[in-house]
Length: 251
Figure (cartoon, rainbow, N blue to C red):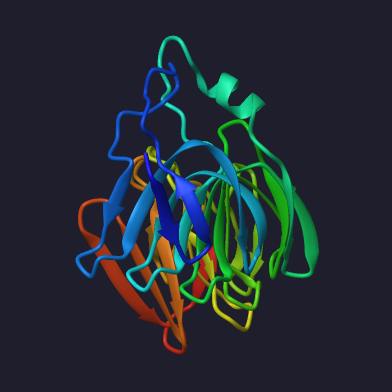
């Protein structure tokens, strides 16, 4: 197949799926404006981006041609080729995020239109420990950051504890489809304030009322706004409380 031209160079799209780990997908897709939307490579190739130099087997692009997602590997999982086989070949990189260097084997790297990294998604079985405004937090999914590399969201492992002005909270959410690390349940604003988290174990006591998760499929979703706390959960639960008028406590 001819080379596919992108803003980051020309690449050879997949033209042979005889390899047992090659996916059956369109090798090249285009946006309506004619720019490349995605390219699935015949072999892994090195690509130089503003955020660094990475191995790529699949790349997707914004309509203006800027990189959107990069997958260092993108093999077909089957009875003949498992995650363990794929991970063995996964490259490792060092990312400078939120003032620390993280050594990661990324399954996917997601970029802002500016070219700055937005999120790094891990391979199943891997984990990272990230410095967040709530201390060291370990995640098995990955991490999302703002363009200045401060933490935007993270999915903590079971057993994590956040200290808050309302008491200790235990953030955790079961995600059946852990495809990408962005928009995780524990979220921070640009100033480092916790703006929301999901929990299975934390009870929220508001005066004489107690709110708790139904089961692992319906965690409590706690949202913080200026002077207001919102709670969402099972059975269409959605309530908001002004902290100036209610005594709120986590337990």
